[in-house]
Length: 284
Image (cartoon, rainbow, N blue to C red; front, side, top):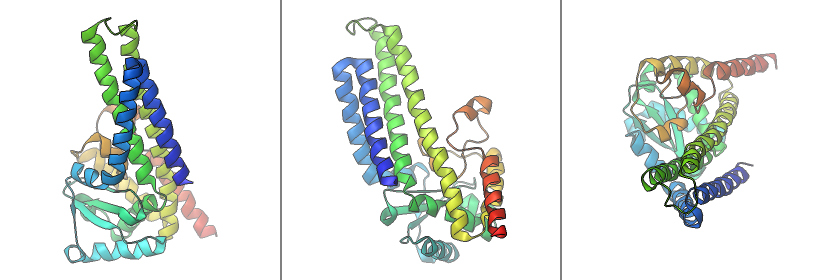
């Protein structure tokens, strides 16, 4: 199912990018946009893990660097039926975590320094299971492609916007006002697709994490703590990588307007679902 979603997402957003390119730049714009989509898809498929780790300034660690953390990841990945992922630590004081990589055999689970200090062992297990669930369902690849396509649309729209402003009406018969309007609407449409995918994946990963640990309530407790810390402790990271984190790294920024474009579902709703899952487990 996830492989089908990856294919449909790649095909759909590549076509969308080509249509946007054609609307903004004619046949030449469509060809350019299609080329950008192909190059970015191939590049992000093979190098997404390295690119994301660089965005977070994370370093890969060995078992001797953090034995307890490594043992916990190894134990939980066996429960999930996964190969051992690469483990990394980012220096940020904000408690957070994410998974990246193109498939379960080439996956990375990364923890910030802050999360290793802020959570209890049981809560950290819940977070780790959540990231392993992303790997199990291959969410990282889908999210990376969605983010890449949204970024490509944004780049193309920015070029078109400035071209219309500086070039006036010299671009054939196209109305420069219409071009500017399209350049504004297109990235918003791509961002909405990206957000819808990310929110659905977070709910699925939460549920699977509860099944892996058998204690969904510990992930619920962790999410509450992480959300509170994200509002107090800033994180400097490229916004393109924000959707991969377990909670929104920019939760304390932007006010209500940013809330309309958040890539994560509301933490309160995630907690409520996990608590319901926990009650169901006890009842069963």
